[in-house]
Image 1 (cartoon, rainbow, N blue to C red):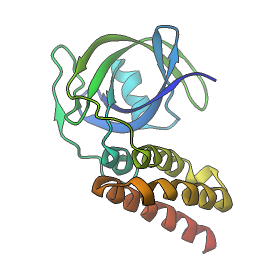
Image 2 (cartoon, rainbow, N blue to C red; image 1 turned 90 degrees about the vertical axis):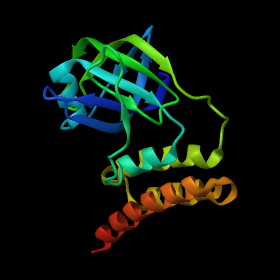
Image 3 (tube, one colour; image 1 turned 120 degrees about the vertical axis):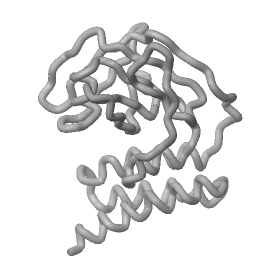
Image 4 (spheres, helix red, strand yellow; image 1 turned 90 degrees about the horizontal axis):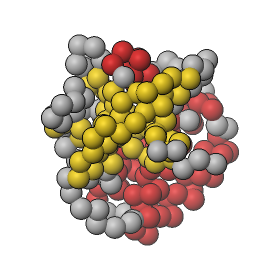
Length: 189
């Protein structure tokens, strides 16, 4: 299995409108592969401009927010890049598309890092934050999973939330659980 780094990807369309989305990028040699699902704004933007910014952040609200309709996060311009980074990024990599492997479901954009930046220190691991990232991935796949799998995953992840969450993690969990509950209710209707 490849190494996948969970990021918040910023992309922009040809007119400069920024899109923010959580996306795991895949290590391949010295490059990163961005493989967004069809259809998606990230895919459209990468095809249009060939540039993305991989934002590394430990802010659980951004991961949860992007999956629950909260996509208005402060941005900061990057010198020499038409795509900005998140203000909350601990670090970032500007990715430039080198090649594209077309696919009906998930085209693979092979990217090289053109520039990087460090902005804030990483202050350590937290189980609740890791659970938020896992729950965000789960929420992005609700339409593909049976209710029993969703409920089992949430029950397990909730242990970390109950034991180690701070205010931001509890808020992020609440946003994600709103989506999960609405999805499960729709299955019963």
